Length: 232
Image (tube, rainbow, N blue to C red; front, top):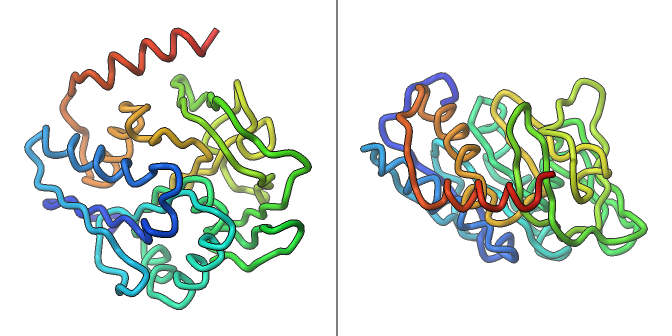
């Protein structure tokens, strides 16, 4: 899947009834709409807890509370999701989704639970909750959003962070998320793709297998206005 040029973009939103606390399902809508505005055919599939994991161009995991996060991890472990990712399927993971893909995560105090083990990261419970604006430097660009989580995520040796934190906490006050050849992960809600249209286009370009035409929208204008306020 990862090496093919996509003719129809299929975005699979996984378990929105469990991992939809912070509106991260909006990422699917934004990606599909920005693809359609470039003349690409795109569809969004909502994958419920009783559904099989379908073939898709891109799988999305959002944020959720402790109980739903644990249930999501159990359901994904029993599904074909891990093998699909291992075969090269693309994934965008936010907050709880970021933690689920790792080796383990802690919820409900210090209790640790098994993750999917797709990325060498571990999330432990922090002493304080991270709530507020999150600004992350990604190369020469900036990601903005908000965070609301109690985790502290440690990256294993060789795991590349998505970016460096300029405001907020992200993983640990220094780094945010992680990046592999097929996975983008961040603690930024917003939704992430709506607040950072350049990043949405970067994800789309990788998934469809070609450089995308420039697209001007009100989202880009709002991004620049917000960046001027938050980035000093």
